[in-house]
Image (cartoon, rainbow, N blue to C red; front, side, top):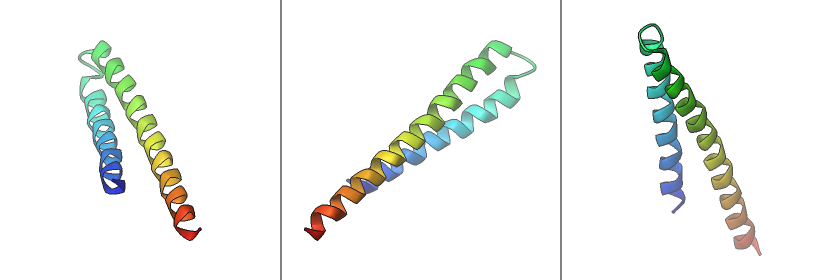
Length: 68
Protein backbone atom coordinates (compact mmCIF):
# COMPACT_ATOMS: atom_id res chain seq x y z
CA UNK A 1 0.00 0.00 0.00
CA UNK A 2 2.88 2.36 0.71
CA UNK A 3 4.12 1.96 -2.88
CA UNK A 4 0.75 3.01 -4.27
CA UNK A 5 0.79 6.14 -2.12
CA UNK A 6 4.28 6.94 -3.37
CA UNK A 7 3.20 6.71 -7.03
CA UNK A 8 0.12 8.87 -6.55
CA UNK A 9 2.35 11.59 -5.08
CA UNK A 10 4.26 11.82 -8.31
CA UNK A 11 1.07 11.99 -10.37
CA UNK A 12 0.40 15.32 -8.68
CA UNK A 13 3.87 16.53 -9.67
CA UNK A 14 3.19 15.51 -13.28
CA UNK A 15 -0.09 17.44 -13.26
CA UNK A 16 1.69 20.46 -11.80
CA UNK A 17 4.39 20.26 -14.46
CA UNK A 18 1.81 20.08 -17.23
CA UNK A 19 -0.06 23.01 -15.70
CA UNK A 20 3.09 25.11 -15.54
CA UNK A 21 3.82 24.27 -19.16
CA UNK A 22 0.31 25.37 -20.15
CA UNK A 23 0.70 28.59 -18.15
CA UNK A 24 3.74 29.55 -20.21
CA UNK A 25 2.16 28.58 -23.52
CA UNK A 26 -1.22 30.24 -22.87
CA UNK A 27 -0.08 33.39 -21.06
CA UNK A 28 -0.03 35.65 -24.14
CA UNK A 29 -2.97 34.09 -25.99
CA UNK A 30 -5.59 33.20 -23.39
CA UNK A 31 -5.02 34.76 -19.98
CA UNK A 32 -8.14 33.23 -18.39
CA UNK A 33 -6.95 29.68 -19.15
CA UNK A 34 -3.52 30.59 -17.79
CA UNK A 35 -5.12 31.62 -14.49
CA UNK A 36 -7.06 28.37 -14.49
CA UNK A 37 -3.83 26.40 -14.84
CA UNK A 38 -2.15 28.50 -12.15
CA UNK A 39 -4.88 27.28 -9.82
CA UNK A 40 -4.29 23.66 -10.87
CA UNK A 41 -0.53 24.00 -10.39
CA UNK A 42 -0.92 25.41 -6.87
CA UNK A 43 -3.45 22.74 -5.87
CA UNK A 44 -1.32 19.95 -7.36
CA UNK A 45 1.80 21.05 -5.52
CA UNK A 46 -0.19 21.38 -2.31
CA UNK A 47 -1.63 17.90 -2.73
CA UNK A 48 1.84 16.50 -3.41
CA UNK A 49 3.14 17.98 -0.17
CA UNK A 50 0.08 16.83 1.77
CA UNK A 51 0.25 13.27 0.44
CA UNK A 52 3.99 13.02 1.05
CA UNK A 53 3.57 14.22 4.64
CA UNK A 54 0.71 11.76 5.18
CA UNK A 55 2.74 8.85 3.74
CA UNK A 56 5.76 9.64 5.94
CA UNK A 57 3.58 9.75 9.04
CA UNK A 58 2.03 6.44 8.03
CA UNK A 59 5.46 4.85 7.54
CA UNK A 60 6.68 6.19 10.90
CA UNK A 61 3.61 4.84 12.69
CA UNK A 62 4.14 1.45 11.02
CA UNK A 63 7.79 1.38 12.13
CA UNK A 64 6.87 2.32 15.69
CA UNK A 65 4.27 -0.44 15.85
CA UNK A 66 6.77 -3.01 14.56
CA UNK A 67 9.31 -2.04 17.24
CA UNK A 68 6.86 -2.64 20.08
